[in-house]
Length: 165
Image (tube, rainbow, N blue to C red; front, top):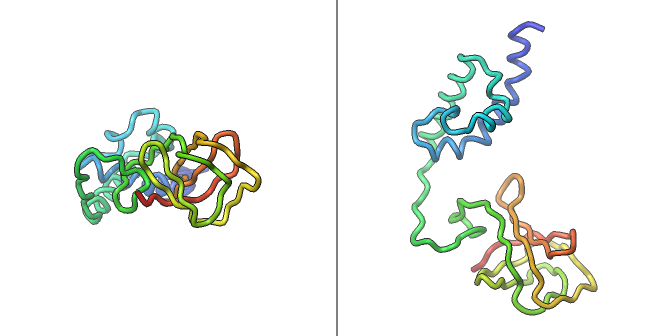
């Protein structure tokens, strides 16, 4: 296979990496992608297979999109804002304990956590017949997009939730 055919086959991978790395590029003002990632991350993304021209093109593309993206608003204080709309740069999961009884999932139901956060269920997921007192839960972000999912320890069913407090 010729070098140009290899480059064409790698282009979708490079574009996908660029889209996924764009927020990272925005956070590291002016740095090239290879300076922002560890060697292992750079290699795992397949970017080590790009030739010098392709890597330069990717860095130019990231720079253009960094300039076009609005600057992130600084967060006031050190409040935990995971899951809060338009305020949550962190995608770290929340591991906590529900306050009070858990009687399964139900759309519109609110779940108060021992850390003070309150999350409301937005989908129709159910977990019938489950009654627990203050179970441990994990609320994690979706792989893509801005959705968050609540899962009760010991169960595989997840409910889509949004943070309200």
